[in-house]
Length: 326
Image (cartoon, rainbow, N blue to C red; front, top):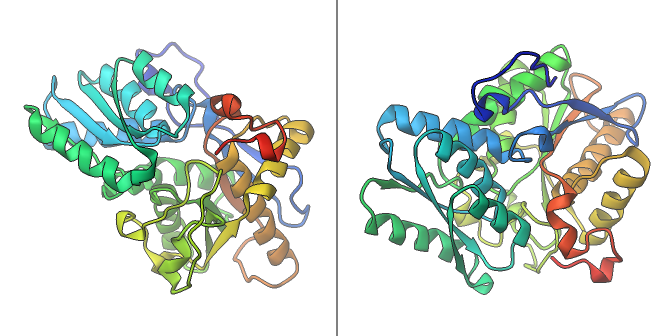
């Protein structure tokens, strides 16, 4: 992992090949391993889809060099797309609900993108509509639309999953990942299910999110502080395929906050709330495999730590739970 030892011609060549690291708090009999995606140049897992989606869309002629990418995003996808757009000769405009990380929006602007804010109370559905309106007003503009574009999941099928597979010598018993768009989990699930149909797959969401509605559960929609995963409207999450998922686990904000602190203090992992949620769910799955409650083909669990806590320090992620702003 992170094997680059020769000079590279572009920052895009540094995307991927991130370290896979043991989560020490997981059972010895069934260890959990996490991909540390903050090692990407834009410091998140979304760099993978930024590069992959734009390269494929340019190849297909969806947009031409000098054209514009317009994307509704909570932040990290915007950064990933902005990193790739400039290197590939594209302009970038991002539509971001106001409540999301100020740090992320500053970074998008620093990378040369234009940021358009929408009211937080109108949600991502409104941001999606606004992005399409902006694209319609421009010449040669495209909306990659991470929530519905199959290239999102394909990026993880082609990069993230094979890297995990190689690092663990093909012995992956369960895959656990938080779902915002669902692209990370869907790409990984499809890859590992093709290699072993018994691979156990778990989606992770914050308590109060609606993903469990895909499995027919009734969910009390509530606000949550955990960022980057979850949804209040499953109709906008077109990539998620319930047939590829064995379970959807909801993790309360208070547990996420505690795990963020534990990961930093005990394991030296400065990761954000979605990573903490992934760690909690992955450890649950690992213990269930160890105890014979889940039948998995191998005694290993793979997950991802999507980004760093440094993007959220202004929201008090390491202060008291009450001081943490979602």
